[in-house]
Every structure is written in C-alpha cells, then in structure tokens.
Image 1: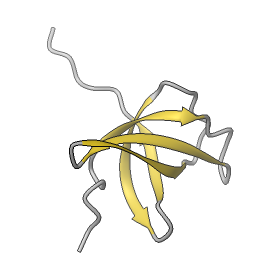
Image 2: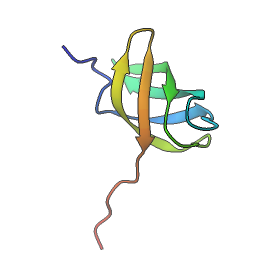
Image 3: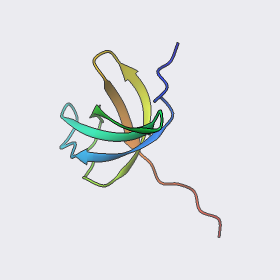
Image 4: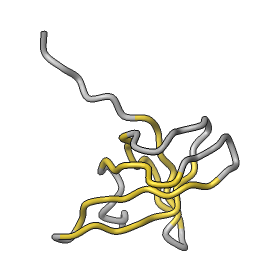
Length: 72
C-alpha cells in the first residue's frame, strides 16, 4: 500500500541544499498540514512547490520540483 502523501504536492519549509541533503516539506493532508523530511537530487529553496514521488519509513519523502502546467 502506498502512503497517502505519494503523488501530492507540498511546499518546502526548510531548504534542500543538494543531493543527499535533507530538508522539510509541508503537505496538506487529512484536513490539516503535516511536516515530512524531504530529500531530492538537486537543491530546492524554501517556498518551492514540489511533487512527492516516493515515501520511505520515518516520514522521509523523495521530492522533485513541481511546475504546474498553464494553459495559454
């Protein structure tokens, strides 16, 4: 069973400074917000929107930058 946060977007609240470094992501879920430990393969700054692509034990999630598509 996948964790319910997989596939959701969140906002970086503590920066991820590079590959192997950890940061934090705030995710809206279950009628509130929850904080997860985030890791990525590239630096991601505070305030960036990310997509959660994998979930690991210990509330650790893998994230990638998320840029929503816009219609022109």
